[in-house]
Image 1: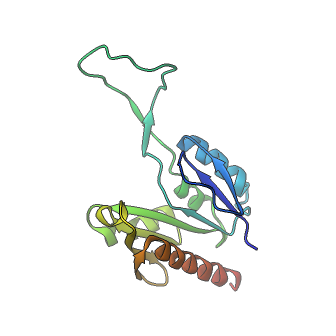
Image 2: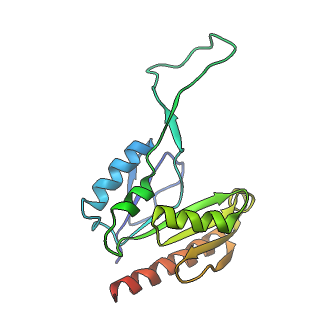
Length: 177
């Protein structure tokens, strides 16, 4: 059967049966663990699905202790976090691993998803609006890929299963080329 490695930030959800879980707490740690899982030639996985994003920025300096309230305002310097999926896309020379990014948008859903797919060099971008993606049991997404832009609607589980069907279809296609 398939071997699944879940690299996850802090969540209260149980690890699914048969899944190896690697916990991370930062974008830098996520990048490091993914590098270990994928290997230098990116041959450690058939597919990489980045279903949640880390913050775009992080504090330039991390305090060792709690910052105590001392003034009416506080200025923090932020630096850019690595764009983990874009880095994998940039390094990938073969059609594997299949790369899937997600995008939550507040406007211009399709245009932004198409741009993200191209700029990050991924096979698919699963895009939805913030109002559809957060809360509730149902979801509606558009999967922007080379083979079209189907809209998937239904329970979050059903949508996830259909996304995985598209990933498997892409894996089958890359195996035959």
